[in-house]
Length: 119
Image 1 (cartoon, helix red, strand yellow):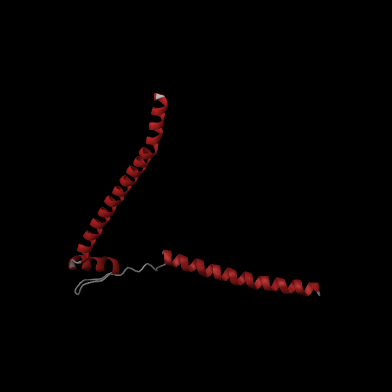
Image 2 (spheres, one colour; image 1 turned 120 degrees about the horizontal axis):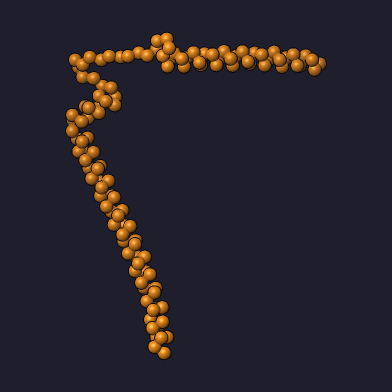
């Protein structure tokens, strides 16, 4: 009789204990998410403070948009000479266009010849 009572008590405690463990893991996950969000908020706050700084804005404009201040010397390097990557690309596209144009003409001539042979 005592063993049946002990088994009954164990069976009654299984469900609440499993619920407790499940809720505990959910709480841990949510706390981790909260910590991650706080870290993101901290980074965004720092970035927002940087955007209020005029020197940072000037530096970003110069770097990203290639802005210059009055009196700065600007050097533009053109890489369009013979043998440059731009020149070789232009040559390749010109060759491909010629090849496509030539192949289209030859295809047209062949199709005309085949049509004449068929008649």
